[in-house]
Length: 245
Image 1 (cartoon, rainbow, N blue to C red):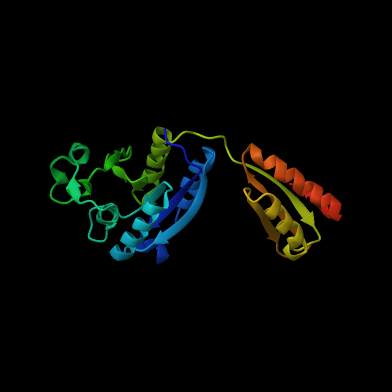
Image 2 (cartoon, rainbow, N blue to C red):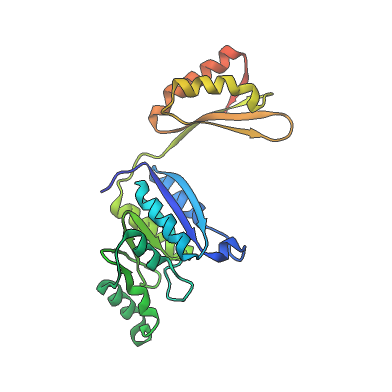
């Protein structure tokens, strides 16, 4: 089992950027990660542009985080992700015997001549089983490539997480609502806490409109209790009106 704190998420497809489809992966895969104690470090939506995809995939493969990538692994001419993943990883595309067996098992003679192209994967890729229609995804360089359809992708992502990554304690949140203030009023307090506890991420979320209030707190594991208690002490010393959220 691998260990990590964070994942990246790529969603690939012109249809998302054109507004023809709405992304559901940010919420769906994000929920799977949070249930297992992981954080989503970053999220990007990319077009079906081969050169841009190669650049982005090569950058994220150098970044050191595991990444889920959804979309563009089909067999049509606008599906570039398989070839781009191979270029980014510096390996050729080759026909994966296990993927061939799955696609032939699902479609029989109708796998040829087109559907079988989905078995052309980066050399050295490992398969991700697809319980929906048996056409597999694949993993290479800690990047897990899934279909764009959420009904397929999310069970496949769940399999990846449960098979390859150790489950962690769920993330906690400790926060308060500070009443009658703006973020500007809290800036000195936030700067002091950020300097005293640089390893913990302090967040602030203002509520627009009246009455003014700001949610202030920390997210993380058991270790956030110490900076959270320091936050409460600073609010008391500063005479702020606050309520536990």
